[in-house]
Length: 89
Image (cartoon, rainbow, N blue to C red; front, side, top):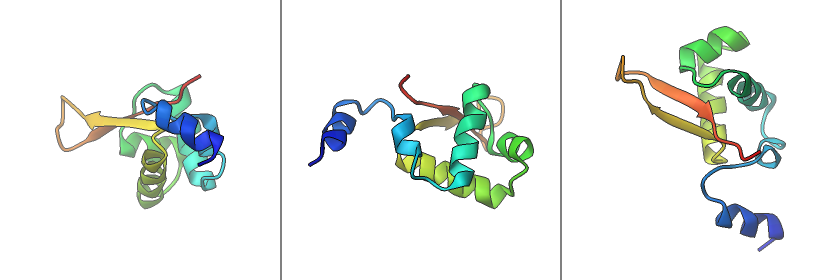
């Protein structure tokens, strides 16, 4: 077990920018957009980044695997999820 893995296990509540470094460019772009905008839906992220919705969905899945985003259901429309960045500063 490396030092970064042990640190990651100790801090399960959020990821770091180190976790984002090796991800695809689309995931990095989505992370940056979420950094500047508190909470967004998948459609809003697609409009802001000009990426196809499928690419945004893939990027969100990759960010979720690294535990750097938080998602929850929208109270105004339960069909949509709201995404926010969960990176420890």
